[in-house]
Image 1 (spheres, rainbow, N blue to C red):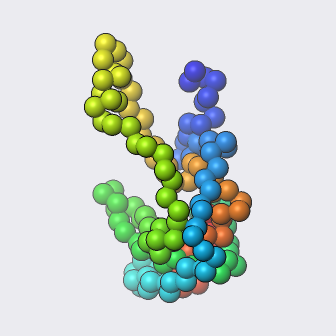
Image 2 (cartoon, rainbow, N blue to C red; image 1 turned 135 degrees about the vertical axis):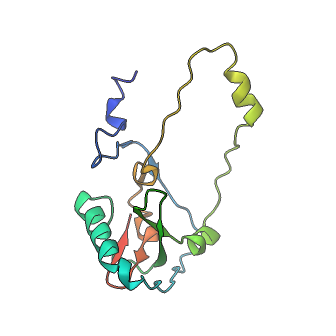
Length: 152
């Protein structure tokens, strides 16, 4: 199975793996755009943020936007001191129609492991970039920095 589905696994730092059949559709309650102003980027981080965003653009993980939607970005440091851009989608989340799929109970999941001797834990690094937002929903994912507007 691992060989048959090997294209979903990243092969290196510049690769994220890919699940092309995973198309995420965002349903909203109305068509009024979420428009939040951008957050200021601290001056010492500005060049690093600009380079980070350019890297995402070059890889095709994000693209430039002219969407009427706009969510702000917050920059945080990970444990290894590398940069993470966090898009504040709280405004969009408030307008999103929730999925009504039941979550499995933890005890049921644990019970299903009974009798097995092999367990695997996979780290889904850059997981947010591994699924694709459907074309009809992309405009909703627009985010804004001072100098650029992008979307997923």
